[in-house]
Length: 279
Ligand SMILES: [Mg+2]
Figure 1 (cartoon, rainbow, N blue to C red):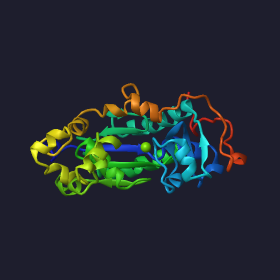
Figure 2: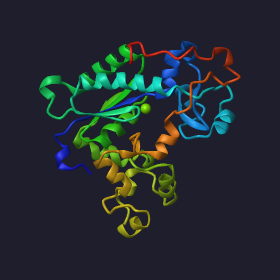
Figure 3: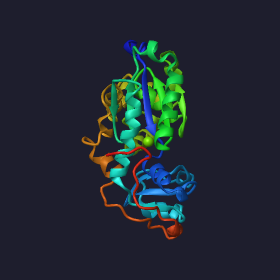
C-alpha cells in the first residue's frame, strides 16, 4: 500500500481541534465545558462536549437542537477564526519551510530535517505546546510517511493528540481502519461502500476487480477519488476549491450573539483578537 518513495519521507499533519467552537470557547470562558455549535443552517463546527450528543459537522441545526437542546448556537466570527488559524500556521512555519495550509489544518514536510529537529515526535510535542501557549487552542498532530497516513493516524488520537506511524506499520494500520476514514470517502460514498458490505479499508483493498468497477474502486483497493486525494493535494479542503466544504465550514455571516435559550445569559463577549495581535 505504501510507495517506496514514501518510506524515507516524513509528513506532519496539524489539525486544530473543533476549530470554530474551540475559538468561541477560548474567547468566552463561560462557554468552556459546554456544548457549543457554530453554524448557520448546518453545523460548521461543534465542541467535543456537543459531539458526545451525536452532533457532527454537516448536521442540520434543527436535528442538533433535537439531540442537544442545551447547546449554545453561534453564527460565528469568520475574521477572528482566520486570525487564530494564521497564528497556528505561523508556529508551523517555524518547524518547516514547506507548509501547506487549509482552513484548520496544515501539512508540514519534515523530510530531510532530522538533523535539525532530532526526534520528530518530540518536535511535534513542542509545536503543540507553542500553539497552545500562543493561541490557547489544542491541535492534534499525526506523523507519517505521506499525507494520508499522517492525517489518518492523527484521527486516532483526537483531540489534543499526537501519534506517529512508520511506513512498515502502514499495512496493518490501514486494513483495520473504518472505510469512512479513507481520504476522499465522504458520507455518500461511505454509504455506497457499506451497502456493498465493505466496512474497512482492508476489505475494500481485496475487493474483486469486476465489483470494484461498479463503484469506481481501483483494483489495488483504493477508491478512485480517495487515491487521488491521498497522492495529490487534498483540494476538497482548500477554501478556494471546495464549494461543498466551504458551504459547510466557512462562516460568512456577520458576528451575532448567541441564540441559545439555554445559555443566553452566557452569550459570548464582543469579538476579540487572539492573545497575540493579529492585524
Ligand atoms: Mg480540525
